[in-house]
Amino acid sequence: MRDISWVTSRQDEIYTAVKVRSEKSLKSKYPSVRFTQDDSAQLDAQFPTVYVQYLPGRELASDTEADGVNAFQSDVEVDITVSKAQGKTAAFKVANAVAAEYKRYGYIFRMMPRLVPTGNEATKQVSFRMSRNIGEEDNL
Image 1 (tube, helix red, strand yellow):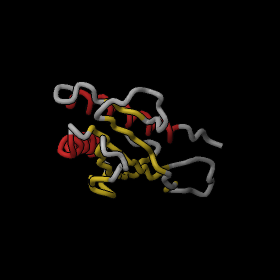
Image 2 (image 1 turned 90 degrees about the horizontal axis):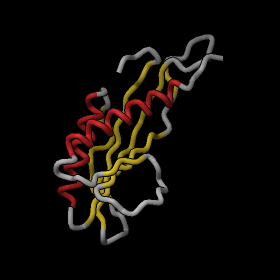
Image 3 (image 1 turned 30 degrees about the horizontal axis):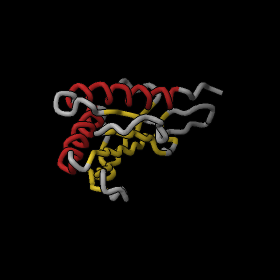
């Protein structure tokens, strides 16, 4: 059986690059922007917060040996939460900046950024989904 850990490593590599580049472009306007992949962080609220979650994808390009993963579909959901004072305009600006970085890696929209109800009067949230196929030997 071939090692298939490259799948999660590749997604971690993309997350890190998107985070670093997005923070660089957003820090001047939103100095407290925070990126996370943890859905249950025990930190004080910090806005805007960018929560990145890789969704279950599927294996692609199977071969007769079927002893590894040659390629997979990488689906990502990004939720941007801002304070009510920052408003939905800020949420969309952050979403657009993060989405632009994913576009640099060949991701396409599966769901355009949209306002999502949070059930909390103190926050606003914008979410989007993107997808791309990634091969084992792809250079990113």
